[in-house]
Amino acid sequence: MARITVTVNGADHTDEVEPRLLLAHYLRDKLRLTGTHIGCDTTNCGACTVLCDGLPVKSCTMFAVQADGREIITVEGLATGGQLQPIQQGFKEEHGLQCGFCTPGMMVAATALLERNPDPSEEEIRWALSGNVCRCTGYVNIVKAVRWAAQAMQEQAAPEEPATRQPATEQAATR
Image 1 (tube, helix red, strand yellow):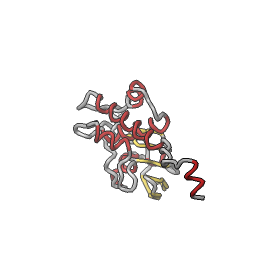
Image 2 (cartoon, helix red, strand yellow):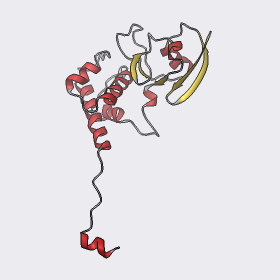
Image 3 (cartoon, helix red, strand yellow):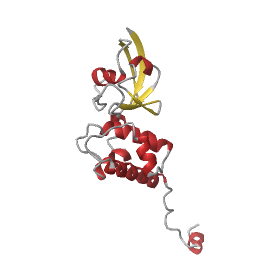
Image 4 (tube, helix red, strand yellow):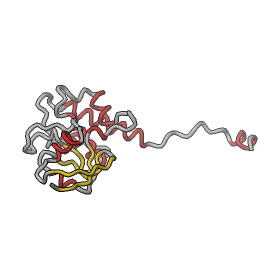
């Protein structure tokens, strides 16, 4: 057994694990974070994608011991305070899912993309998601969902218009 300490979705966890335990199984079975799906066990489908220190990784081929001392974000960690994160909202608004099996991995991979590139082109989105397979859609709405999220994030980051300014003569009168 190996002792690991890992931060998952902002919470520290210390556990004894078998050295051969895959991160996907640790997240699902030990921590009960079942949003991380297991589809292939060979890194082909991407349903198990999580962020490890901000980078997307396939948790079906990463050992839990490799996550020792690292920060892991799963799809459950994207929402904050009960509010959907823009990528989650984008998938809802643009119908970016059908069966939903690939969706957690897609959302996590898209989150990593938007962290490093807040205004990606369609080609950049498709490239960033190329390690995630969707067997139900043609990816059109998934790409639209990521574009929706990028736009929403840009609008949130834009400075708000200043409040209506009083004419200079009114400002002087109120001093």
